[in-house]
Amino acid sequence: MNYTQEYWDDVNSILDNIPQLKNIYGKSIFITGGTGMICSSVIDLLLYLNKKSNAKISIILGGRSLERTTKRFTGFAEGMDYKFVYYDATKEMDLDINVDYIIHGASNANPTVYSEEPVETMLANLIGLNGLLEYAVKNQVNRLLYISSSEIYGKKEENTPYKEDDYGFVDILNPRACYPNAKRAAETLCISYSEEYCMDTVIVRPGHIYGPSITESDSRASAQFTRDAVNGENIIMKSSGTQLRSYCYTLDCASAILTVLLNGESQNAYNISSENCIVSIRDMAEALANAANTKVIFENPSDIERKSYNLMSNSSLNGEKLQKLGWTAKFDIDQGTKKTVSLMRKEITNDF
Image (cartoon, rainbow, N blue to C red; front, side, top):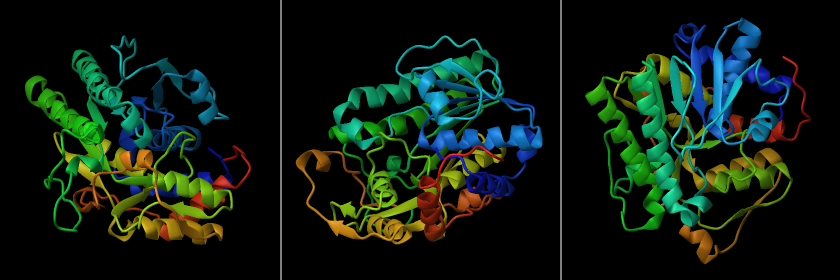
């Protein structure tokens, strides 16, 4: 992540989009998947609040690599700005922490991994979440937020954005379904804990997230497009790109997560989407190419690449339920892609 003054200015401006933000001041929060694309952006917002507003938020990051964590948050000190604890979503955990909130974002989010490790993909979503829910009940955590996915919706005939209660078909005998089916089961597990143990849980369903916090291992199409654009190379598309998606800039996604954490109704799920960010894959590729002054070209995919493709031709989301909480997206596709290319091409500074 290239921390620049431009990035911190954007962080500062995005905070205005989070209703009741001061309710998180002085609280402690445990975040899994902290080096991932989405949760690292959430952590950036919290780190900024502590530095600029003296919010006194205790940030605890759960992950498998301290080295990767310190690299992602260059300029911030482990033990001072945040605390790192070892956490592996595929194993039973033994946490010695006390927190007010949990955000669970640890999960395989890499389509290549889905096809290569379907078993681990499912277990990470179920074992990891179950352990956190057990911990939350035992330690009287105020609320657990689970980061799910737009892939839970499956296929439907209409090419309209999914509302939170729209559910289509998922082929359960296709190994690629390991991801959406694990997310579906995990959502039901959250609601089951709420019903049986009175645990306060909320769920967010992000669409396709993009921005400067992409990870090196991310094999999603938008991440590959971004790397090509930043490097000044032509963007290679291996499909017609007609699939419809809800795209969301990383900082907008992070502000949506904090909005639901602080304002969402228990036992509810919220799509993370804005109507002006619903475009086709090809539209997204062309926006990145325009931002980087490159071109989009087409090639045929390999059989291995086809196996990892999203099973949905339409994964656009209706975001009205989230917007009723008071959230709005700050960046449209043109603004977000230009910011992404600009920030990833700049040198790192850590000035606020």
